[in-house]
Amino acid sequence: MSESPTASLLQYRAFVMLWFMRLSSTIAYHMMVVVIGWTIYALTDNPLDLGLVGLVQFVPTVVLTLLIGHLADRYDKRIILRLTQAGYTLSAVVLLIAFWQQTLSRELLLAIVFVLGCARAFEIPTGHAFVPALVPIDVLPRATAGWAASNQTAIIAGPALGGLAYGINPFGACAICVVFFLVACALTFMFRTQRAVIAREPPTLASVFAGLHYIYTRPRLLGVVSLDLFVVLLGGATALLPVFARDILATGPLGLGLLRSAPAVGALLMMTWLTRHPIERHIGPILFAAVSVFGVATTVFALSSWFALSLGALIVLGAADAISVVLRFTLVQIETPDAMRGRVSAINALFTGTSNTLGEFESGAVAAWLGAVPSVLIGGIGSIVIALSWMGLFPALRRVDRFEPARD
Image (cartoon, rainbow, N blue to C red; front, side):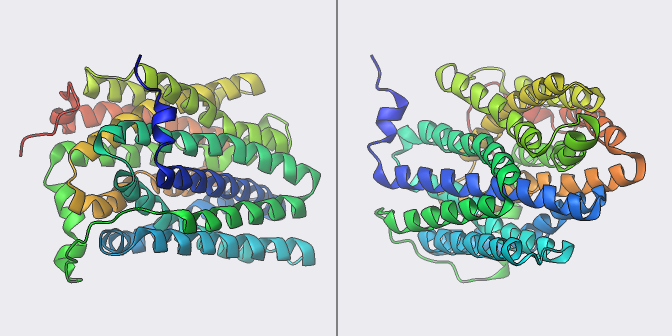
């Protein structure tokens, strides 16, 4: 009998510490997203402000992406992660003080979101690039699945805990966030890894833009990282969940937390299945099918006025997105050399991770113009159109059958 993935990963202490850091930090992050989203909508009653929350998170990533990737390839990733956790902790402390002194304002909340966005812009690509340095190459697929599972577990627990804690006491919810961030910060000092001495490139424009050039010159890779950007740009409905929770589904902060957790429930269930039954053939067609199902589920959510159906649609949405995430992340890994991993991971984060925040602004802006339901409905249909369009624009991606590096 083969060794279980969990038992194998537990042998690598540095990876385990990184896993718990990601879990603790991401739980607190998503708790704060719920708290800030509900608070700012209560203050302004304007869905456009929910979109601004996404835009403010997106700006730091756009501005800093190329620098982040270069730093991740040149310097100790542990130091970068420590600084990001310090930034998270600072933002949580400021929010805690604002609730205590009752000095909350739209401007202060957006400023806190900006700090969160800066910290997350550094954390995500640095963490992705760090994982392969902590485990042997033959354990990397298990580590990748475990890394993704920690994120999905946190996305489930964070919003639900945030909604529950906020409903009981908003100040207490912020205090819990501070504790979780402090734990994550402490864990960054427990990493021990043997790092090979690598010659550092001089900080030239060519070295900074190398990741972007690498992706651009490989159509299959470009199709992978751009697909999620455009799909989530149109199909992301998470920014409008406070509107659906309060005005359409008639539920409170706890209901909002459950709605935010539902996609992660579907994703975690699907990733658990994929760890035992990995997709090995017909990679390209399955990827595009998953994106299409994502669009259909988004459309169902937009038209639903029944809380149970809405939860179910979000669970299916999350499951379809999990398939897409696993396939896309694996394709990126097999086509990226070690020396480029930080820069390519940063560009990938720009195309994929930040598509959620920019999509939130798009959803909020369209909702302020047409209403929440038309905004999400347009996004769901648009996701299906994007999937069909990308099949034609990137035939090499559509024809991928197995996880094998493309020939240059």
